[in-house]
Image (tube, rainbow, N blue to C red; front, side, top):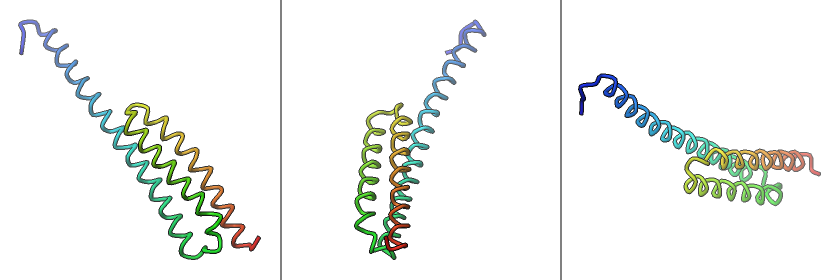
Length: 116
C-alpha cells in the first residue's frame, strides 16, 4: 500500500525484493544440490554397469565399494532433505567419501586387469 513518503515506499519495495531474492537463492541452492547428487548417482550407476560388463572377476573387490557409495549417497540425500541450509556440508562429506571410494575402485580394477 503506497504511502505519502516516497522513501518509505522505496524501502518497502527493496525489502520485498530482498525477500524474493532470498527465496530464489534458496531454491537455486536446492536445485544445485539435487543436480550434484544426481551427477554422483550417475557416476555410481556407471561404475556398476562397468563392473557387470567386463570386470566380473573383480566384482568381489568392487561390489562392497559400490554398495558403500550407494549408502553414502542415500545418507547425503537424507541429510539434505532434513537439513536444508546445511546441504553444502553434507555434499562435501559425500564428495570426500565418493572420491575415496572411486580411488579404491580404480585400484581394484587395475589389480583385476593385471591379474594380481
